[in-house]
Length: 79
Image (cartoon, rainbow, N blue to C red; front, side, top):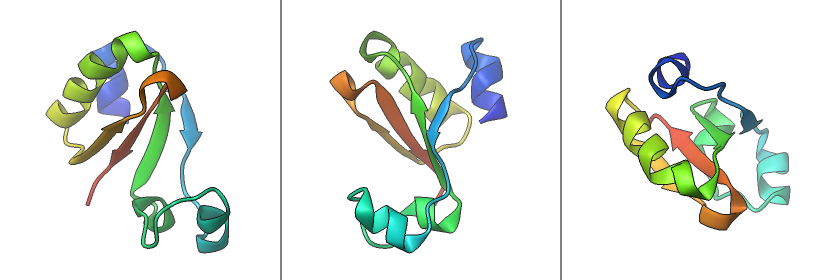
């Protein structure tokens, strides 16, 4: 995340990080989510910036990158 912040040049606001399995289920996360392993974070990103931020995230090593458009966040994970 620090590498992404440096490349993006903006603060990275984490909206969801580690989740215990019961909380993950409550929020509708998939079973065996990377969040339950401490290997994922959701970050705030406006829709208009998501494609660029997603590309930067891949460049710094995230291999799970999912944009959520109008919901204004991106899921980032390392498998």
